[in-house]
Length: 528
Image (cartoon, rainbow, N blue to C red; front, side):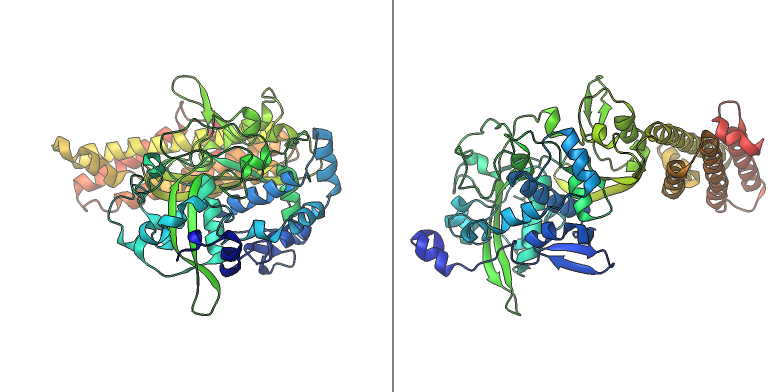
């Protein structure tokens, strides 16, 4: 008999327990530089003795941070005003009240495998779990593959158990970042036709920015926004809520978020996990159901205080999205603009700009998906020094502009090599033939490190002269590398008159473009 058909009190006794407050599930790094894994309670209680947390992926780390922030809000261990926020950040106010609140919650509320109120899950799926469930790989965003899951994905049936701590972190990541698509479960045979429609998670289509401090406690305090006494619900389980959650017979309208604790624990997926044990007797999950979750109204600006905005083609400002073709560092100017332009009201960047006498890092994370298939996680870290945001924005803009210009020079040089090498080309072959000589991929891969060095030098600079010198040095590094990358591409030319001519003209075109009248001044520098 399935647990769902047993009397709840008896089912609770038969069901195994796994409690993230008592079981180590947060990968962390101590201030002594040692890797460890701690419970949710200890992550908060000893937050200032931990350098930070580090999940298997950047998205998993963000999901864990979101959950710890939610506990801080729910326990009202958070600032009420901006002045309170400044006091807590400067004083290093401990997070022990949040740890005590979490530790004092009823044990039955924090059981991942509770038969009626499973933590973070939807117990309404219980009657269908054995027949319609899949292997636990479906729970892990990077392992599921195409989220149009009516296709025949044999790997999802693999029964290898997933340890409970891994499953817990994967569940949090699904709630925050789950891609859009179609679930494997049949709505007609279960709870309703809309059960199979997977909406993208609230962070799945934009860049999330986290202010990183010196310790985990510092990071949490930096990212706790003033809650004004209204933390909102903590979404502990699908079956317990102030108001009924969505049904699955018809597409519901989105619900309004009622506070930051609610925001950071939104159940973006209906998930149910079947408990099992590993070969060494540890709690695990061997089968899961994953289906449609909560839908939200469009979030108000105060619920997206970290968002970096860019102008869309129609002129409207939209949150910056991750891109498979454009690295995050190429958008650093937009990040610094969010701090430098102080006309967008109170948000994360407005608060960070008020800090003085310290340096921190801004960590950007995004999930790239092509339609319903996850491609990769992207992340990058950018230095920030309050009071130097305008200089950082300037060098980010100039650095990106210089990199774009060098890329265009490489493209033109490749075209010159192509015209000489292929005097009578077939139109269908043109793109691949030009690509043979185009060193832009090497240029973009190489520029990442010099760009970050430029930002670090600017953050440490004491005057504008040092900033200008850093830009000239950065431009020289890019120009020298561009010449090397082009020559490497041209090495494949035949050792004959045409090959020598193509090589000479392409190199000459690159050099003239890098120092020509249209080149950024920094590229002309010492190369005149």
